[in-house]
Amino acid sequence: MLREAALFELGLMIAALALGASIARYIKESDIPLFILMGIILGPYGIGRFYDFHVGITSTAYEFIELGAELGIIFLLFFMGLSFSFKKLHRQRSEIIGVGTMDLLNFAPGVLIGYWFFEDVLVAFLIGGIVYISSSAVISKSILDLGWESTPEADRMLGGLIFEDLVIIFYLSVVSSILLGDGADLRSIVIDIGIAFIFVIALVSFMYFKPKFFNKILDTESDELFVLRAIGIIGLVAGAAVVLGLSEAVAAFFVGVAFGGSKHLGKLQRHLYSERYLFGGIFFFWIGLETDPLLFRGIGTILILIVIASSLYKFFTMYYGAKFFHMGQASSTRAGIGMITRGEFSLIIAAIAAEAVGVYDVPVITETIPAFAVSYVLVMSMIGTILMQNVDKITSWLRID
Image (cartoon, rainbow, N blue to C red; front, side, top):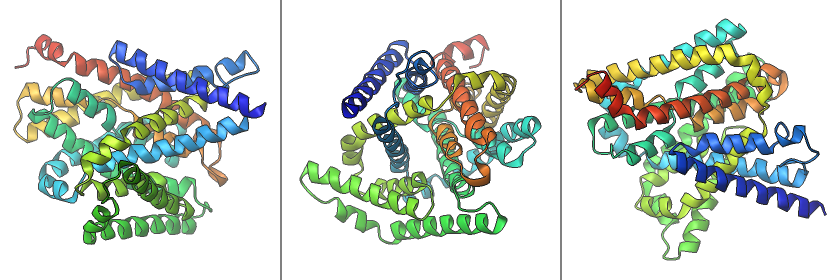
């Protein structure tokens, strides 16, 4: 009977994801907020407050959802890595560094306001990361939907996203080493961070000096064997990272970078997109499942302040970053508005915080930080998407040519 109940819960989750995606498409919004809302509604803090049933009530279903969420993180970061290549990074290095360096200022509002409210350096550092990173997935999709892909502002935005993604990968290495490490003393933290960087450097070095290795692994005419080999190597490297106490997300990202420089890039994107979408949806659903909406009441003030401050910061840093490369006012304005959306990376930081161990397993980190991240992403993803869809009306209203 337990298996039947678990299967029903999983079926209900998939149906909810399908409904959320349909609603998102109908209202022309990102599907990330809808997936999170479905998780909240069907979770222990939604219908679970009123009935003895909710998704995840059986341990079998919850374990599957939790594992699916972890696979979601892996696939999201793997696909992010696919958009990189060492040649591309080298070719666009000046633009990426120029726009990205100015964009680093976006750590400031989260860190400053976070420390003002909580008077804790680590909590402020976590909020800073959540606030800093724009949503590569949502912004890239919006660029395609709006037909911006051939515009100069799209190049500046993508350059900024590349820089942010590289920064946040190393940020995740540090955060996961601190929150998920064995010890809380400085020596243990330094050792954990050192192991993380050695692992990353070794992986990147192997990819750089042995690029043909990844081509050979996927050389097969069988689509089925191609998929098995690709997922096998992704899972193996990500799993090895976890065994070493590192972030599976970081490992998956660099595997994506390795495959992104191979001749199989297009095939990987076609054949693994469904897995990324399914497990990515489960990850966002799981975030909602773990979020108590009643906690939103305690973070209303900080949320409002950070939404205003981070929106303005992101707009002006990207606006002047684009202006630095001699772009016009209209293009710079579109670039600034286009980078406001927050999404998947902010939630990955929240997921790491929710799993904190040892002395870091305290409510402000495991509960308040995830609740803040979810509410912040819900607000910013909707604001950012709406602004991008109406950017021409905004520039016209401001009389910007």
